[in-house]
Amino acid sequence: MIVGVGVDLSSVARMAALLERHPGVAERLDVAGALLSPEALAVRFAAKEAFIKALGGAVSGARWRDVTVTHDTHGAPSLQFAGAISDEVKRRGIDRCQLSLSHDAGLAIAVVILESDGLPSQQE
Image 1 (spheres, helix red, strand yellow):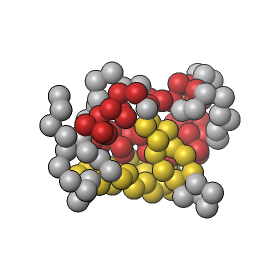
Image 2 (cartoon, helix red, strand yellow):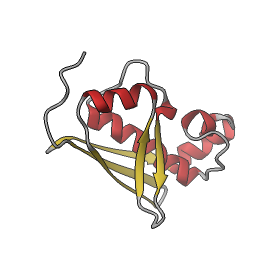
Image 3 (tube, rainbow, N blue to C red):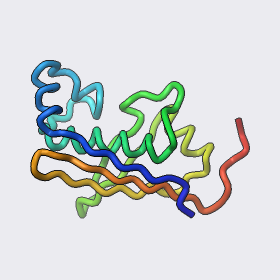
């Protein structure tokens, strides 16, 4: 059952300008030590925003790095969760997170679909 859908569009030029003004922003938004192009960072930012939209809003205590974009051996993207985000995903009974990423013509887009096999946990 689909429990959430989120879409986000990000400007590569805006991300490039942010990286130029604040070189350390990449480490705050994504994996520390990763050398990311503006396109890669923009699409990762869009993925994180799309995920939060699919959840229905911000999670208390969450950090940007609690959601990480990874790729399997075939290049398919997925999201990994840590901290408050991981706890929230478990609490809501989310079993799968589908992720699609693309960037072209100066824009990056991400689509997230959250799925559950059953009802969310009633734990508070």
